[in-house]
Image (cartoon, rainbow, N blue to C red; front, side, top):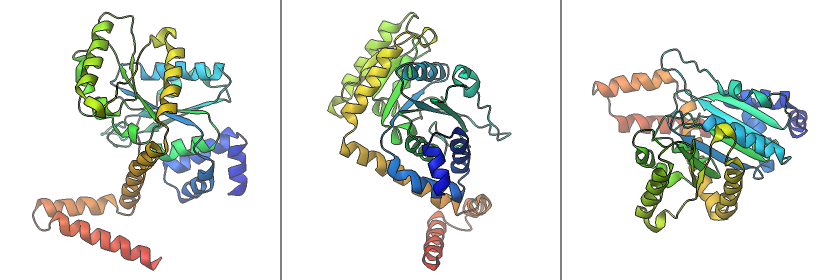
Length: 308
């Protein structure tokens, strides 16, 4: 374990890729490695990029990576792709879109399947972000699936969350409902060369005004990612938001959410999917009730922990 840790800290991409696979597969060896590396975390700026499909999230991440590397800093990208509910597979196409970085040792790109997880991220996204942070990357960019209005989970693991919108995609303000407004640290109007950009920015400002003091005014940045326009300004605003919001209280709040998710996932790992389905069938047939079922599981897990 010590040798493996040293290889990752030395920038060994092969060791890091292997560790990422173990972390994603919830291998005990991967979790042991995370425990070993955790004291090294806390230095990277972890940024979430979320928004509707077609908003240009991948292109933004690609351009941000290029801008970060131009400054001499390093960057890791976690791109979450949707898992098919029928085949269980995922395309993992973001590595294809970002091929210009493939030979750059200062860029690490990892595609992850959502594995049916709602909220735009994969189950092991938090752990993988911690791994990349510990590995010494200056920036970690997390690009969510792009499923619409419920991609709020990224705000629970990212230091800064950017919500990407595009003018002319139906009801633009619709994207600001159902929690999206609350999770944004900044808004990005991508494809800003399209008609309707001024109207969209006014709608964002109006929606923020309705939020009251609980939702302080978030900055709005215009970009045309396909041409690299506005990327330097976006990177500057991301860093500014990180400085303003990276207080001890915010870090504590983030870890409250992260710990809740980690606990939930660890508990589910101890319950076979078949057992959960069987219990669901019994409850659906009113042969059992959900409250007794959950209490039985909790008692069993607690007893197993005591035995160990």
